Length: 308
Figure 1: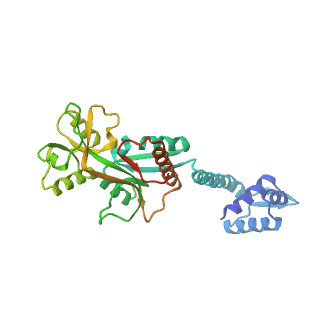
Figure 2: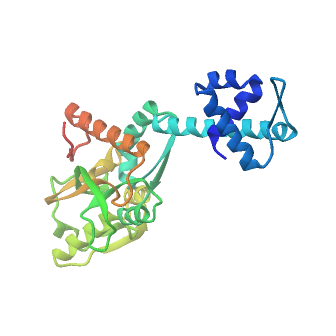
């Protein structure tokens, strides 16, 4: 049973005339009649009574008509929904991002995308970079903003570098501000440390060990907002991305010399092509970063790596 056959059947049932039905369907009348005959053969019962030039529905035709109309309506709805998805009037983007990005520039990029594509559902998952890589591999995300470099054990991903930023030492505002700090200055100082899975944690530990010491933790295991609040409360200092200090007047960020920087990339699985909605979000994000860099509105310490 084919949709075309059901459409021809419905047209004949509504016009009660084979020639008029063929004109409505823009097909030759013999072709329409042949398709109706094939449908009757497949169903094992005549659908029309053709007596003295009058076309009427048989009991089988009466039973089939509402079903045929429903099937054709459902098929039309499916076509419309796919067309709307292709036109980005509907869809979904599952995006992963580190908390520092969610608290910073990502909110404005999401607002622009929602304005341009209000029918596309946005789902944002916050997490450390290692967690986001894992979620990409599991198919739980369409795109993710992750920190490079990838580890050798990571799944095959397509990555595009979009920005780099400084890591700074953050402390409570009550202390005198130093022009800069060295990693060695963290020796013996109480550190507020992120939970496992955060790239900043791994970068801080690696830098301290390269300098020949193990850092001392005052508090360990926090998320981004908790780490900043613990620092504000005077529990210790922390190494954080520079962008998270915006709108935090109670905190002071001190540059590290030599500097520690991290590179942020937009990633997706290599074996899965992003949906049209995800591709549209990628374009929106890259345009937003390019325009912000050109206008000089990126937070201090951030450098866009996309073409302007």
